[in-house]
Image (cartoon, rainbow, N blue to C red; front, side, top):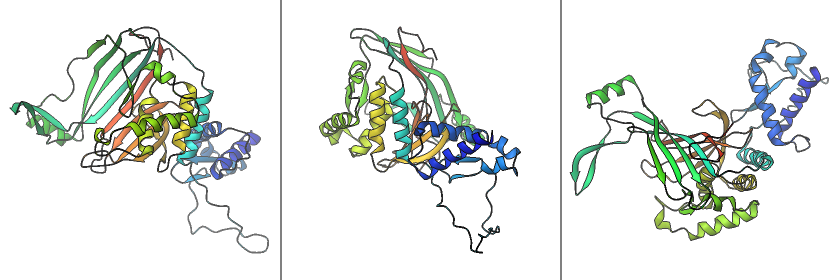
Amino acid sequence: MKDDQEQLAQALRTLAHRQPATPAPVPDLLRRGRRARRTRAMVSAVAGTALASAAVVVVVGTGGVGPAGTPPSPAASVPLAGDGSPPTRSPAPRSLDARSVLLAAAETAAREPATSGRYWYTRQRTSQPVRSLPSTGKITGKPKRREVPFSATVASTQESWYAGEKGAPSRTRTGQDPEVTFASSDDEAKWRRFGSPALAPGKPATNDYDMRLFFQIGNHHFTVGQLLKLPTGKDGLESRLRRLFDEESPSDWWPAKPDFTGYVWAAASDLLAGPISPGTRSALYRLLAEQPAIRSLGEVTDLRGRTGMALALATAGNGDAAAESRLIVDDDTAELLAHESRSPARSAPLLQVTYEDMGWVDGLDERPRN
């Protein structure tokens, strides 16, 4: 058991200091780090033994790697070396940066098996703050919007079946499990004094389409079949996305057309929830790893309680527009768990989309078998 703990300690030290000599791939080290965090309580129970002194845990995004338990204070005594001088300290460990996280996801995605089906299925939970209320009055034929004197968030679930075959119908089920959450009891009281207006969507609706639904890369629409034909190499995918980027009209973007990094990032939030091949998914992660300004926020928990690695990119803000966009990726599977938009003017996210399920099915109303 001592040998196992020493191997784990060495693997995590190697990960923290970016030593390339380890035989284990990055995703495996990430998973070992996760297991170490989950066993922190067990290690603390045997503190003071040689086993506990060898155990280390990864703290991604909040300080790197250190021994289990509370770190010593700066005033703690330091043992001296044989000549009476203080021992040489190793460089301070660093947390995983965005490039490392994305390259790890690329390796994981490349190893996933290719699957297929007649429909691509997604189930997503969307949450966003209530920003305005409809009014029965009209001005120049357009409904008035009333300012919201309280703070509330509304969430609902949508299921989608994207047909892969030309001529096959597609389907969405919207407005499922609506939920309204008030920021405080005072906000709920203000809502009641305001007349308790409806905030969540009405009854769930089933919508059938005699056409294929689309995914987006910028302002370009792609069918399921077209996504499956996207390049599976990083260079080929970059070339394709740059051509699409050059074709984009600045007038189609608000508040302004993004740079190429922002363009790839925006495409990723849609493509990673779509039916792209494992090769394309891996290439997309590798392309993201080369983009500047993407930051790692470490391990976070999504609205369903699942843990993943959070990545962030600052975006053009204007008034209430988002100033930061985030992706949460499962480091065990390289699947997209959620994406969200935030503004410094609001404590709550402007938008949160949590992907509860996705995968191939063979018929409408079927769900993937997980």
